[in-house]
Structure formats: C-alpha cells, structure tokens
Length: 187
Image (cartoon, rainbow, N blue to C red; front, side):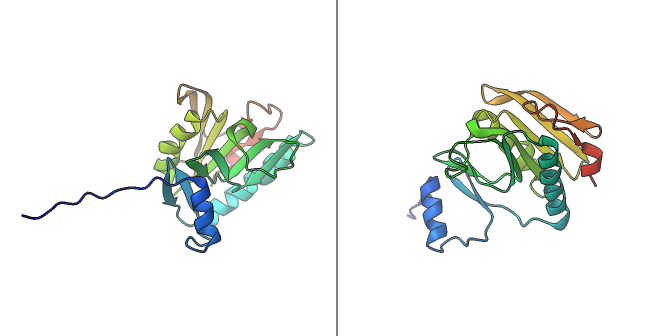
C-alpha cells in the first residue's frame, strides 16, 4: 500500500524574506511581495506601467506642493510581520525619522497600484489586504479598463466606499487640494 504524503507549507515572515534577499537566495532585482506569509513573485513592469507610475509620482509631488508629505514609488509598505508589499505609489505622512523605518499603514495617506498584468489581484486580494490593515485610501489605476477604482473608508476588513472614475479630477481625501487629472494618466 502506498503512503500518501501531504505537502507542508511554511509561513514566511518579513525578516526571513529580508534574510533570503541579503544572502542571495532571492535576487535583489526580483519583484517579490509577502502576503499572509506567502512569498509572491510579481511580473515584470512594462513600459506603459512604468510611464504611468512615473507620471503619477510627478503629478502628486507637484499637486501636494508644500504639504508635509512624501510621495514615493515602489517603497516597501510593511503591514505586519507576515505582510509586506511594494505598491507602485505611496503618499506618506512626514515622519520624524525621515523614513529610517519602513512605512506602515499609520503613515500612509494613499496607496496606488498601477494595474495591468496583476489586475485581478490588485482589485481583489490586494484591496482586501489594504482594507484589513486600515489603509485609508487605495487607488487602482486600471490600464486595461481605462479607469481608476477608488477605495475609501476601510472598516471591518472592507472598504465602505468604492467608486470607478474614468475622467475628471481626483484628489486623496487627506489632501483635497492635490488633484490629479485622471484622463491625463490613462492611455
């Protein structure tokens, strides 16, 4: 009689993933995210995705002006011990440590994912993850659908407000004067 063996899974934490990168087991150039202890390899970023991300960062920096915020691209966002993601754009509160520690949801005013190859993930599991950790506002710039999906008011692991926008101005709730023209971003 054959014995059936079950696969076991090992839940990874952020420190283990950092160690794997430091020791070369995961290449420094690999795009990985840790979601609920599972290491996910993200697809390469295409030129359209990279261009929209860069334009978003530029426009948000201009729009926020002298506000005490930091607008950055692909900075790791540590949600907890088992979750660290790399959103395309982060708008963060200014902190006293000048960014020495990784940003957390409490530091985050807005998270943006520019979405094409990871569209279903960004609109589903990622939205659930950000809501669970009370990220105040999450935008999915959907390059396939030509729209921005805006998530606001996280409560109980879900966003209370979700709306689709394809044109007009859009500003983060925390920075109402930092308006970005949606049509200028979308292909």
